[in-house]
Length: 636
Image 1: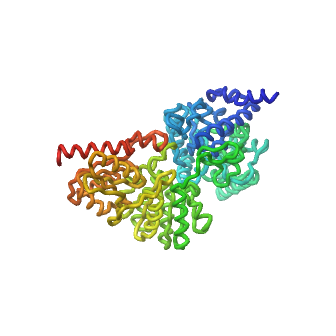
Image 2: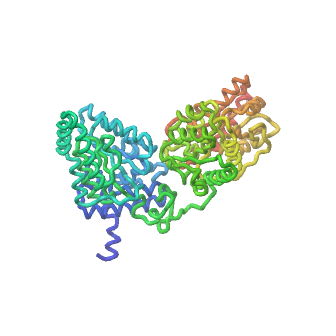
Image 3: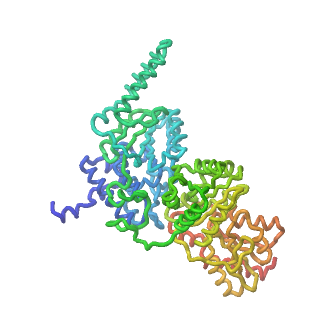
């Protein structure tokens, strides 16, 4: 074949894939070619939009094998975490949507019911798919429907406690359910070849299990000797299996185990899946893969194998966006500086060391840094234990993920008045990752926790200052929240009233505009626009939004109208809290609160979503002008 012919044929097989049935018809040789074409396709598309490239390069063969063995959408395929579903989207006819992956009107970066009948759960918080699968399998059994349920668990999801709760119940129920463990974090080589494949198939043969059960019953009926003898035989049997292939604890839970198999060998994975499908009970198929497989920059990326980069240059793997100072960087630097001064400060993260900035502390003080895996609940209560032991833990997680640990923050930390600082990265509308990743709930949800203080810095200077203030608190928990992306230029205050920063003020006291956190610059822009209409605006940054500062209520009392603008849900948000504090203090100044409606907002860029919500300087200025002008014609 000439070079020109080879170039013309690139992507030929992939172009012919419009659904799972097309993959089922392919030969072994064609599948290998298709896998290569899919990797080329993913690298080309994700390099332009950014996304979870590393995890998806690792599940190409697993996904192809699943769609050859099972019949989606009648058989249900679940991905945990959902960012491993790009190849699934390709196989189920969504190739064209990758030009706008994670962009306005384009494909979601996670499974999406609106996109395809092949997606049933829109999961993107890890460790949930096995619980969904347990419920689905029970429902199909109760309804008498013969449908397979398959859950792919990997990329750290098995470190989450929900997985183990689900496994316990899956074993007890005994329903047909296939769990594919995408093991991309183990260093040992998979056991492959004909012997291993034969032994795996044998263990999953229903006839083989019936023989074992018969032996167990016969020995169990023999007094004194029977039960001990069976346990010895079982131990020997297990020992033989352990000598052939590394065994996890799954069979001790009552779930059959097969593997490990080479997760980059379609035939090996397919063989294991067919045996698991025919077994008639819960089965774990252990597939060993490499994250970022097939793309050298991803394979050689020690941090996270290109887990979720922005747009990048294909040849080098380097980011194409100009470097900028991000909120995460400022936090990471200041935390290390504080740790230099205070040996009692320790860091905790939940499988997010690099994205949250905790990795910088870990590099300097590895003995004072703990990555607990995808286990936010454990992280919070473990932090409580560290605090009880005389330390000050700093727990760094994405804002959306702390929701999972509300009970632990409430009862394990706050009720004991323990000094734990939770640092919430990606707070507010984050954009491309969509509704499950928006950090819009924290100020509302955690605002009800007694004794918890919440800070929202507006720039790098206030982030550093408020982080130090938070860690100085020794009689209860604190939260520091900030958005994603680059930090805006520092915005100094003209004066400070108690803990409240006044950013600008005029001789007229028409409007008190409370700009929460990163909306400080927006508040300044709004004030300038409203001033053009003849009204005076005082812009303040409360800095600490919970509990509501008394000084903020006093400032409100001196104005004709109070307006709050926040990057969080309105229900129970800062505006709600300030309104309640004003009522309690007998301050009857009207208040209008601007924020995020408690709804599911689609993915898009942060600026696009904020514009949709009316949270731009132009929109807010128009609203404020209308409200204050109506007060002139209809005085309170």
